[in-house]
Structures are given as structure tokens and as C-alpha cells.
Image (tube, rainbow, N blue to C red; front, side, top):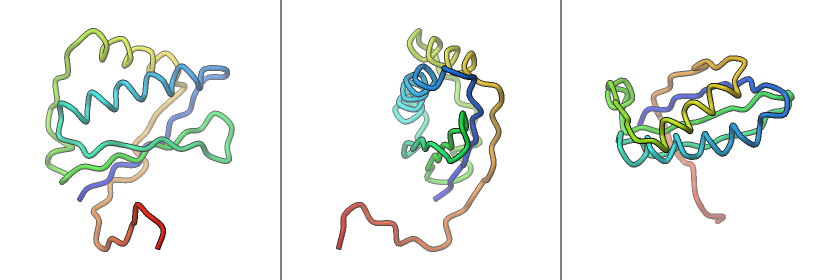
Length: 104
């Protein structure tokens, strides 16, 4: 499994719009590009959100995914309008995994 970790610096008072747009973009990528989905996290730093996307492998993540559709395009543009900057912080290969979805 391949993981991409992103850092998003959001403009003041734009977090809600960004989060709504991020969800629509993430849904489109999941439905059309072969990802396992993503999580978005707040951080201790104001206006900094961290995204964590899972892919079956790095090759799938690196493919040139051409997404179309009005909803995707609008959401992608909304995300961009909200950003001061974005960067891919880490590109990770899973070597060991014990992440659970339920308590023991």
C-alpha cells in the first residue's frame, strides 16, 4: 500500500469551504482513480490541515488521472481558492500494518 501525506495551508475563514470541496474531490478520486480514499485532519497550527490518502501502490497514485465533470471541477477550483499553499509532505510505502477499525 502507498500513502501520500499532504499539508494544506488554508486562507483565514476558508476552512469550511475547503473541507466541503476536499470531500467532493476525494470522492471523485476514490470513485474514478483507484484510491482507497483519504482522511483530512486538523492540526495544532491554525489554518493547517493534513490529508492522508491511501492507494494500492505508488504506480496507481502516479498515473495521469484525468477527472472530468462539473462537480469535480467546481470542487477543485473551490479548494484552490481556499489555499495559501499545499505540498506533499511524505510519500510512504507501508512496511508493517496493524491499524484496526474497531477496539479490541
